[in-house]
Image (cartoon, rainbow, N blue to C red; front, side):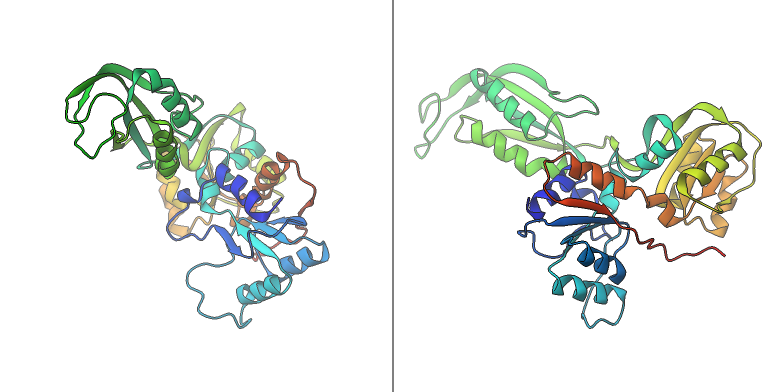
Length: 364
């Protein structure tokens, strides 16, 4: 398997289109055409991690946090980023990073936190707006099934856990081709009426090009008539954070003990106990303080995240228990997501979890 083939699987799971503007997910270093000898999974890239890859004959490192953020004007080995790049290039090691695109998808980083806490009946905490569109295309009746299936196979018509979703309306279309046309039906220079089906489907914007190409490729008309409509609907299966329920409620101290156990913590930070039973929990991997109000509005009893600052704790307002488990700690299981994606393919190379704890924050 080539590196680009595995990257395609990652991008199918968490499209790069979903990453935040500041992010740099994707292939940061290397040659996508190289054959994979071994894969090393990590949260961060450091020179020590690259050395670990070299020692274990892994020429592909998959990391959650991007190695390169912002502009890189020189590579002289002056810091850990430049040292890592130099070491990787010298040893023909490629580096892929799946960051905020993996935060946005339903079975991404926040879902993995829910797995560890045993949460059920999950929903995205802050669904992402502005990524859904609707296409309406006009097709002669006899070709409707062919065009419809081509669109389905290209990713249109998915609504939550349902696929092959479309709305179909029959009517009559009219057209008149000029002397330069070669009409599929009718005669040039004459107005023709044809029994047609208007096929409508919802799709995520990042799939638009492939849906259009597939649709046009099988459509019989010389000029395909279609409408593209931007929707305000939020995609309830894409967005940041997640909220779910415990099967059996716990008290606050029981929950914190369970969090410490599941995430390997010796300490954690939290807001004032409310002495309420805990049933509904909101989570967000990484820096999630911006979702505190969304967590409160969801009716969650607890919000589990990281990088909660001093003044953020005042936002609890005795309505929710805020729990900061640490940035690295909240994202450490992203490696398991990468692993599951890889193992669904028939692979003939080793996949290793890095043994290096790259967390730069230490507790005394």
